[in-house]
Length: 515
Image (cartoon, rainbow, N blue to C red):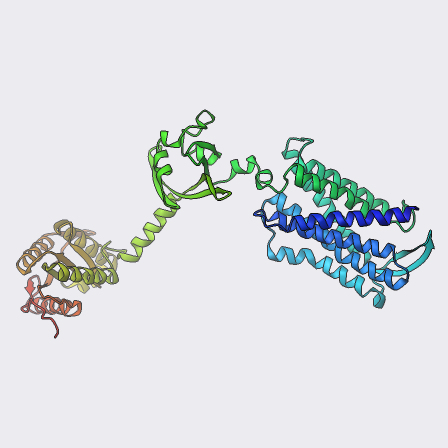
């Protein structure tokens, strides 16, 4: 058996190894690295079998065919290797745009090789010679051949860097999978250099020998060191530095682990308390007994009370619950922002009373409640007399000040359950739940009297304003918001028409139901 026959058998063995690893990684796995590694094994096998076919070719056409097969595997395996290393180094998936850009050169290389006989841009020429019964070939690089070389070696250097960094993170342990992957990468780099420099017997491509070494270290990483176990890749350092708080318990609620962010919230998270039930500690019972997948807790932190949003993930193995992971984040600022936005949506920014939309919604709801419970309800329509004159005389800022203070004074008189909203301009609507006509008239008179005695300081001027108020009550079994507002509005019109600074109650205080 000569060296070429031995090399041919070796190529078959390497290809079979990669096919076996490819088939193994086809099993459903939770870790996405298995999918990447599966493609890496497949493209590596294609390259190896292409090399074998080319070595065993009996004519130039078969050599070209084997060459094409090789380049369907080699550049793609380099790109997939880079994706694999990227996933390990940055612990996230490459973007779609990044994947497209990465595979552009391999696809371009495949097209160049497949059509090389028409343009000779990849290989300028291919010559053959026979040795020991094998038809071998040599190639003269073409104009675009360096693109593939630069890409392949750039990928290889990046991969070596990634594996070196991962090995350093493992504190230079020899039994780290990344140590062996680094060794495999270095050997592949050296064998590739030997082939390109022509330091091996003519016709022998030494790059597949590097793939043999890689197959060995891949198998070692798979079956010896569980490389694709996410706990190995996303190590304790990452668990510790993630910004969300993490607490891990077993199925009985015993504390198993936690990260740094969690210790800043719960002081009882310590090595000494591992193995103890979290229910023994502050708020631990609330966590342990919660059946909701998401909930919020308000916790004291110094002199402040902070809001934390919790999510619970059950740990399932072989259909059995083996524990829980509590993931939580400080959402105090988000909650406050949401509360402020909700307030802005429903309130008039000047007077802090409800805006028109909100006060009408409230009136509709109160009317329905009045109907369903059979209780009284009254409304008041308030208007500041001669308000335009204040704006014209003292300016709109003075007018705004008068509006704000007037509503503030009214709010001090109104009961806790009463509701006030800005209906439009200087006109305000007051809802008085559980209030009949006589009671509403009394409240309106208090408001009118209070405002008429209130002084507004505008520069050196002391200004007083008065209110005209229209009131209406409903005792019907089928309330109608438009008719009730019209009654109060008509009463307000009568109050202003008859001299202002007075309360007029709607003559028709009952709204009959429609048949």
